[in-house]
Every structure is written in C-alpha cells, then in structure tokens.
Length: 255
Image (cartoon, helix red, strand yellow):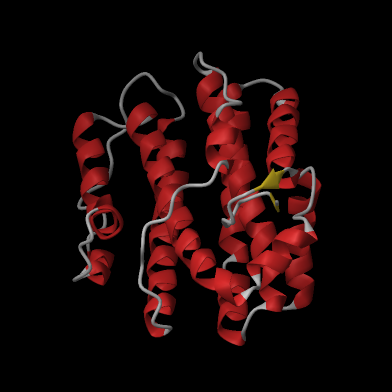
C-alpha cells in the first residue's frame, strides 16, 4: 500500500481517536518475548470482532432461524479457540451462510445492520485464519489468553436503555476498529517484512469497519450523537494511556 494511501486512510482515524498509542506500547510490542502474545491476542481480537457483530445481528436484526445460521457459521472458529479442535479449521472457509438472513419485523434499520455486519464478519474470520496461518508457519501454537481490560472497560460506558444501548455499542465498535487500524499502522514498521506487509494489508478493512459502525450509530440514533462519541472517545483514551500490567493488542501503557 502506498504511503499516500496509508496517510489518507489514517487521517480520519487520527481525527476520531482522542490520543495516539503510547510509544511505550510500541516498545513492548516489538520485544521478541511478546511476539507470541501479540499474534495470539490479534487472533482473539479478530474472533471477538466477528462475535460482536454476530451478537448485534442476532439481538436486533434477524429472526431465530437466521440467528441459528449465524451460530453455525461461527462454530468452527469457536471450536478451535474454546474447545481445542485443531483439525480442519480452515475448512470453515466453506461454511459461510447457507441462505440469506431474514430481517425481523419492527426494526427499520435491520437490513442495513445485516449488510454491514455480515461483510465485517467475513473479513474478520478471514483475518483470523491469516493470523493462525502465520503462527503455524512460525511454530507458535495457539493457546488461550486471558482477555485484557480494554473491551470490558469500554462496554461499561454504554447506556442501559434502548435504543441508546445499541447506539453506544456501535460507537464502541467504531473506536475498537479505529484503534486497531491505528495500532497496525504504528507497529508495522518495527516488525519483520511478513508481519509488516500483513498488518499494512489490514488497514483498508479496519478503516472501513470503523466508518460502518459510526454510520450505523448515527443512522439508528436519528439525532445528534456527538456528545456520546465524545464521552466514549474520552473513555477509550483513558484506557489506552493508563498504566496496564497486561500486554495485549489493545492494552494501555505498560506499567
């Protein structure tokens, strides 16, 4: 990806985020001892992103039968991560949706939510597969990792009544995707050629994911949500800048 294109992608990301990744996180990320953690947690983040998108579709946008289709789509990936089923994971590529999802009545934005989130899920599953392939080639076995504080800390900022909950969770999704994009770009120049090319290749999709989440939040809210974007952005920056005892892909400044 050309430097000019990277700058074009990152300019709105930097304008959206309230802080940049601390240099101390970059210093930790490039330590050889942390490469396994970085890759393992990156894989986890891709799966979590797909699961979050599926949860949003199932809760708000589709009927029960379509919800079961989504669960079947996710099963090979969840079996790999949570149940230790290591054989045949990449056969999951062929296990996409067996039929179009059916929007449920009563939610005017259901099809828009489905369309954007299904595309995101496809891409996140593919990215998960790519990370696992890189790990396999490097002799790094996949092992579970305890989740960091980042996502939970953001979710605590969400309001607890609808439709405000949905709007806030979409804004949170936008911040997570934007931060991922910013971190890929920040850390890539310090990594080996393979990882550098891989992380740079992810920038387009991560930038689009952030925009898709934000567009959905603004559309579904039907009103000015700049105050919510500001409040959640401030919380996100606090988590990124505060000392953090755990190193993870979205962790704060190393303590």
